[in-house]
Length: 347
Image (cartoon, rainbow, N blue to C red; front, side, top):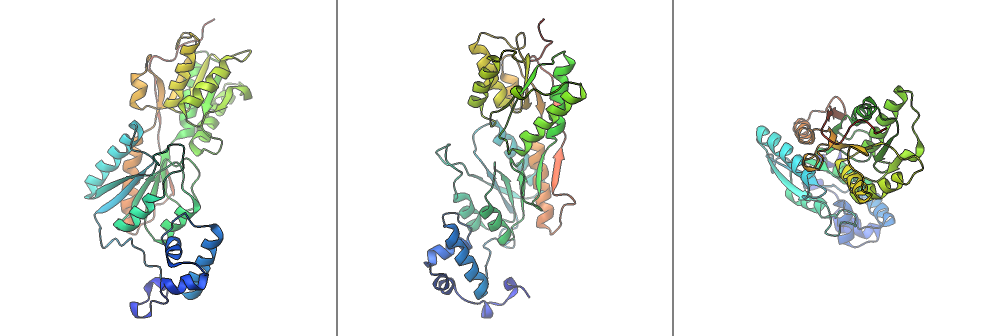
């Protein structure tokens, strides 16, 4: 019988005994038990070994019997239309399921800093029945904490490849990259550049692979100087677009792997007195409201953000009921939305 099934009469040593065994303070041992990150790796190892050696019973604060009608949604930030679309999809699906959603933002006030640790502490205190996570990445310690506390969780559009067995929902990024590039090829463009995400980015890598596949199918080799990593950052995309324009043979079109990077490309082109699409065709990826508001309106690949969040919520409900999804990865289809930012290349 596992440790968590033992009665309170045989619950094993207290946290103070574990702390003494590991040679640390009780607050430090408590941080390890509760998945806090502000503990040195060697200290964490000693405490974890003491927990296992002494048979300490980890009592998860997450108890679905306490708050069966509540789930948590943790997002990177509450600012921006992306988060709004995620909240909309999760809230609608939760309403249909008779659940309440509590929202936490993990981004620190200093946007250059790593996400704050506080959301884990909030989850520990609330006792939600499940968690949706829309964060760029989670640390090994955060994954371990979630698994240790046996709380069902689903990732929405993770940037990095999640560990084996972790359930996630995303978009058909490879197919979206193919559609964006094929659209530009159909207009007659052959010199097509791409602004993609970080080199380790799962979605950025898939969109880049789709771009390369479409070029290969058209009999065109991809040109290394046309592939630029801008990390889904508008300012970085603006800088990379400037460098593309300075090439001896600049591209006639650019596929930006996010709408934000496409807008950064718009800015760089405007600085040089170049017009979209007369001098450069631009395709984005996301179809956030900003794509429609841009001048000219942005041709882009629509990924169903709200639907991804709703699908993740429905998967989470099944996991809360003890089911296991047939596949750990669910991908929803993407669609090309043609607007005014693309045209045939000038002679």
